[in-house]
Length: 288
Image 1 (cartoon, rainbow, N blue to C red):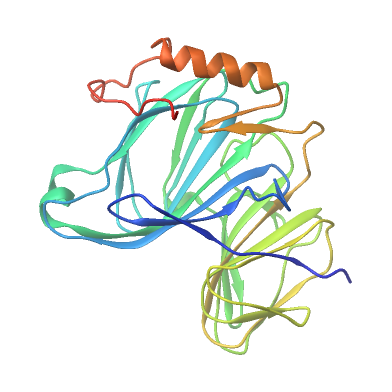
Image 2 (cartoon, helix red, strand yellow; image 1 turned 180 degrees about the vertical axis):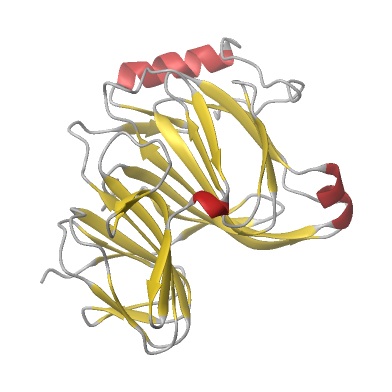
């Protein structure tokens, strides 16, 4: 049994709240098709304050937004306008290019809220990188769920335990939310080649390896792994088949081609990406 690579978060202060980033890191650029992993919050927004992520572009990836608490208002350049609540799945496929913003509704801004969740990206296979931009919303009621004594799980994306999420995926993968009672043991799904476990809260052990809140443990090859909860714990598992080609990342762009990244940079600076209906007065400029 190989020892897990332990990945510790890098904190990014976004002004109103802190994001802890786990992927990518030098030692592990990807886990299966997963190339980006951010843990948002928990952040308390008092009345009159809110998250305001101005319109920004993506290519070559799909974003996965999943909240534990709070609400976000998503708008994008294919015309979507959708609130996401805890347990819902927002699945945005960038393909050849999409622009979106993440804000809140007026009532949430007036009243304030606590915001807490995860945002992940998967890299698209080479034959889908330049496909059409799409957006899908799946309420919590549509996501497969299961459990056993002391453990419950929700399948956010991909396939596991004989079930398949409604999220539109393009390569073999699995993304699970898992909640364990103290003392529970839970076998992670088989057939997932690369795996990583991220602990949101609690105290767990996997193959004698302790994992603390905010840490990720990653394995390069699929193995029979059992999670043991020392106390009530909340975690997620990601994984899947690695893509055939390496992926390059710059800012919000992902591609199998460095030249394509350069083109995306120039297109954003030149204003060639589509606008976001209802949110076209602001944008985030390309980083220096």
